[in-house]
Image 1: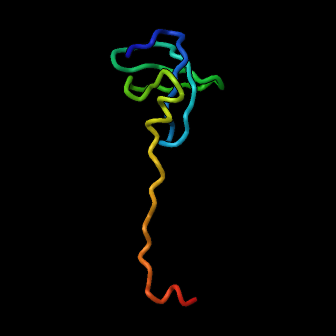
Image 2 (image 1 turned 60 degrees about the vertical axis):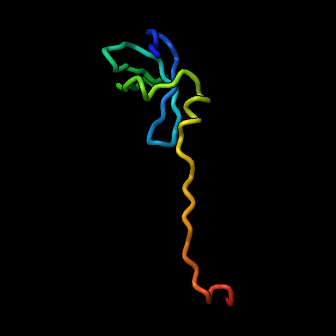
Image 3 (image 1 turned 180 degrees about the vertical axis):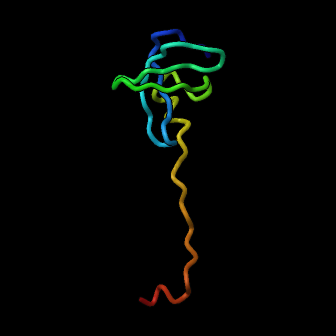
Length: 76
């Protein structure tokens, strides 16, 4: 999906935070995005989502680690 200049989009930062940004420019498969706070980032089209819900759907879920229990744990 291609995004026009000025379109508000969402992306996932640090694999846990969804941020909103505005498309400033497109160059090939890359987009330059500007944050509301004044910063910016360059991302590929595959990491940009048109809605917050689509970005949330791709977030990884929490991994539950199964702990090996000792047979003596239940006594205490």
